[in-house]
Image (cartoon, rainbow, N blue to C red; front, top):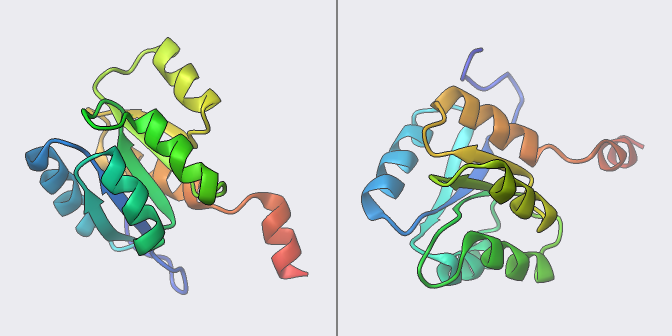
Length: 141
């Protein structure tokens, strides 16, 4: 898979949320190397994610599950109160079927383990940011 932008495609704007600064910086640095990803911003916790989701207007949020101030699931629920169509991809060190099911039931568009490779991460971000088929058909008229 080529990680470069297809001609005419707009980059996907991503808000990166993780309470570990070193991991967040490494992740945003890696994402900035991908042509069709634009890092819209960063947040160090769930409360900041809720604020930045409104302020930065990302296409998708990549959010850690376990954060001390507000969990990724709780932050996602709060964000979805005002932005119900904003996709959230949960990124976690605690990847198991029960946690994934809980995240998806709460509205997550994607769920990834923190060890996921950059290429697979980019694919999931693009899939999450894709408008639903019905919305695309309505826009195309």
